Image 1 (cartoon, helix red, strand yellow):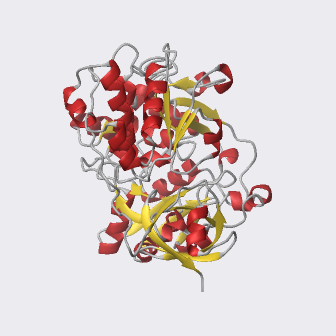
Image 2 (cartoon, rainbow, N blue to C red; image 1 turned 90 degrees about the vertical axis):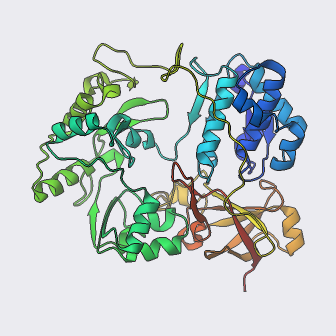
Image 3 (tube, rainbow, N blue to C red; image 1 turned 60 degrees about the vertical axis):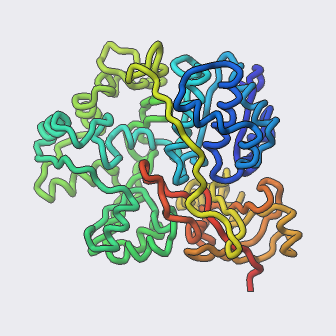
Length: 482
């Protein structure tokens, strides 16, 4: 896109590789995304539009100068970003975990939607608000009801119609109660209201915030079953470990961020006793006396289509090539290339007035540094797979702490020094990397490495709506290791 003349604006507290390709790079202070977006909209509203009164009242406060004070981004860069985005014939917003992993994650996404609607960049090709999910099938998991409040196709568990539809399909009496989020499950283990946990393809000992709290909660489980492809730190705590098959060892589908459902085809047999997840689940269910008679992933997809309107026309024989994008309500439907063409699903577009709110934890005299966590290119999540791959592991073999040269000079630290990073929840010993990729007062620690687990430090405070923890910002102190 850049080679064809597109403009690229990157906003990130850490100077990621993509920033070097951008027309404008903005390094905002941690947790100030909504303020930055409000500042851009202030410029656009002032120059190009009128109306949207409730949102306007909030945005009017966010002059470029005030926004610069909050975010640390120069006022002239805020104006430039607004002009680049607001005057483009088509503009696309792409965001990742840096937007959502905050106590204000929902506010941040709503602010992005405000910006897209304000500039007319929705409901047309090459526009929209596009999340790049943390894993390749997060969209598919959500589509299939991997959330506590919905059945497949985002059909609410609280409605009588949904209860009846899925109850009839599954020949079971279903509850109308919303389930628990992961933080609520851990709290339930702690207080005894949850007795057992079935963990599939997840490594909460390393991936969840405040690791000490997570371990204590898991230790209280009367039964913990872990189903995974490697013996993860979480699996080592389990009472029962069930060996699953990886993506190349089973049939199925993935759904990506553009709602495209594509086939996954088995390339090799799983090793040893490992089996596809759906087979394991069916066998356990049958042992419990609830019959699951699925013959293959294709028969599972047929049931999905029968109870999920947005997947109604999706079937394996239609997924050759590039697959299909839902909504695809029937067999004759070609799929939906982009959403909201001509109108919004709810009728009128809904603006949300979003004021800036600071992070749940801020720096002070005791914990004077901001810490943000994230990934490196060579490793995937908790690295239980990538550290088993010698070529990838050789790229980055151990954890590291990025700090700005100014802070290194102030603390008398050099490249590769051993340091201790502490928060109100725990500590990590790690070696330094001195770089201007982070700003003064900001530290970066990847979460891939158990021996320097970033989530020993992170704050378990979470967004009140999405319940996503604030992985991206907490307060820490830094000192030379003893």
